[in-house]
Image 1 (spheres, rainbow, N blue to C red):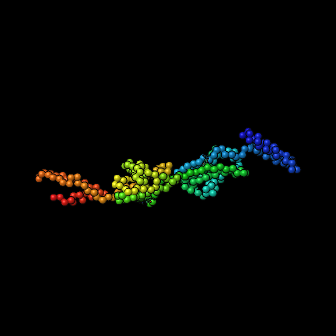
Image 2 (spheres, rainbow, N blue to C red):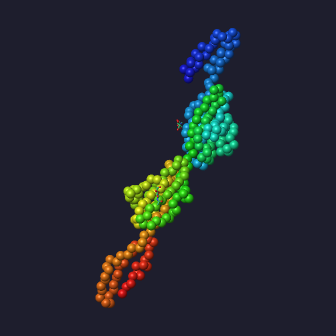
Image 3 (tube, rainbow, N blue to C red):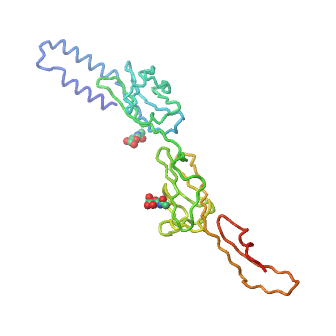
Length: 281
Ligand SMILES: *[C@@H]1O[C@H](CO)[C@@H](O)[C@H](O)[C@H]1NC(C)=O
Ligand SMILES: *[C@@H]1O[C@H](CO)[C@@H](O)[C@H](O)[C@H]1NC(C)=O
């Protein structure tokens, strides 16, 4: 502070006797006044930068602008992205009703109530000195992920065995959510030439030559660092033709004794009735 005052004094002193002015007395008075005001009165200055504030959509945010030695000058808040003056001094200029301003202890606090995505962006705090001074802060408005059912695979889907299927999950939110897939039963997923992974990254889960082992519940999970994460459960049905096998093709037994004939089927959808339709003598 002392050094700044000394520099100011030096600069002013160098200007005290400019040769081209004839009425040196008047000029001297002007410069003396200038000198006194400069030394006695401090110009407005920002005491700290505006922080970068992050808020979830629908929540309230505050941006502080701390100005020392404001004197008779006024502080204005401007939303640069909208090119809109929001407040001047204690008055709200913007018609957007979510903005308000309070002043305590050199701090001009801009309130953004129930933040919208449009409120995201750079905010300038300006003081009408000549030349004006300003500083800028950023309001980040984040949005938790949301799975778009209409653009995603339905919660139950069927595919014939050995066919391919792409299961899709799309989500919006800000920042853009990342999608991962896992099986509900914790089994691995065979993707890309049957490489096995526990977790697959991407909106689209490509399953090729689906086998009956891949039948089951899959979860797609959308995350973007803003809680809560969301998931969707998709049941994959793999349809295959009935397969029947009888371990003992020929069962011999003495007359009058009980006989058990084993018959196994595997099919999806199941069809138990089929097996026992075999002709028995
Ligand atoms: C706010 O973010 C911008 C850019 O991301 C950076 O340049 C600036 O220093 C940050 N301000 C504070 C107070 O952290
Ligand atoms: C799955 O997506 C890939 C890449 O987009 C495409 O080449 C393939 O035909 C799709 N498969 C099916 C079954 O829709």
